[in-house]
Length: 299
Image 1 (cartoon, one colour):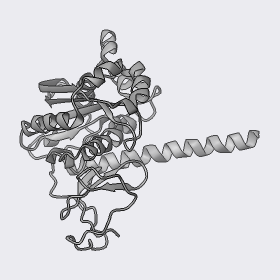
Image 2 (cartoon, rainbow, N blue to C red):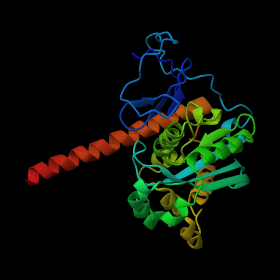
Image 3 (cartoon, rainbow, N blue to C red):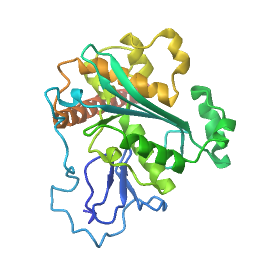
Image 4 (tube, rainbow, N blue to C red):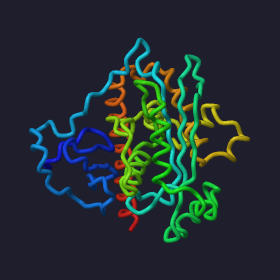
């Protein structure tokens, strides 16, 4: 067991030395905040005692969502990233988008503030950036003129500081966006705002997978939004841009927020999301196992 005293979450800092742990797929990857290379395991932390068995990863504080409406009555900060690829250890963000807003009782959203910025991508990543431009429509020449991620991170921190007390973070497919955002901050030597260190974020993709598990067509953001009537055909041209996807994700979240199966208490919702992720992973790996057996039988 590591001597580091990390909090629970996809991104967490050691309480003593401030090293960062960011979860992505299998296991954990560690790095100090100065932007040193990632390592498979952390160096010993002399400032933190070894966590007692069963308590490592215990959440710092936490909230039950407060208020009569639980988390539904809180401000939501929804964020989205466009990137040069899928591996945060290698690829970098090309665009960052955030929206602050509230969920109305009728399933609509009230957006109070938006932020979006392209991010500089170095020439070494040009080939990757040009590959993803076919999806996002972001030209590499624009990325060469974009501000550094360090500057964008400072702007994001200022945006998050304007959020209301008790605001809750959200992301569509948080298993990708949250660790990617954390890696980018550490690589740039930037501090993570406290909201980005929440024990968990709301993820309406997991809600869709659990509530609409038998619905065909998949659970991509645009697919779910179109299926629910939340995405007009003329808006499809704006898809895969970070600011639009962040607002679209908030619309999907607001739609599912009316479903009574989604817990009102934030701590219960976090657990519910973990169950939803585990159920989906079991279903996926069961499908892959059946597929492999069928391939061997045919061979």
